[in-house]
Length: 99
Image (cartoon, rainbow, N blue to C red; front, side, top):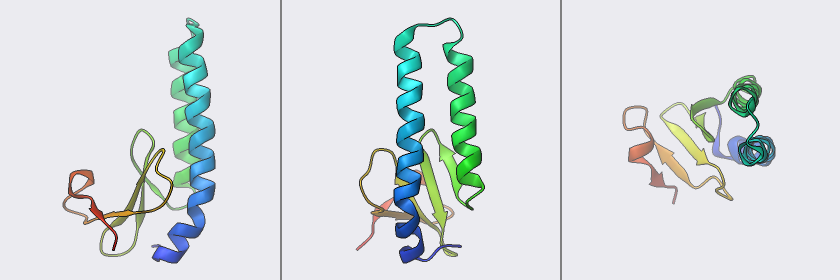
């Protein structure tokens, strides 16, 4: 579980890893290579494994949740900061801005 301070402190690393993976996938898509989809899948899987190893939850493509014990701090690329929260039950559709 993460406090807001812990999650915010980890976010720069999450943003960097996500930005790098995102850019690699975009370059592959633009290349039109016949192996692009398989390579993109491998990049996304490696991105997810790396973040899961840090205790984060991957809820979709470029969508990361930080469990805080009563719900999740929710971040989606390319958001600059950790600004949203949602309960365990509501999911992404129930995101609320953190006050």
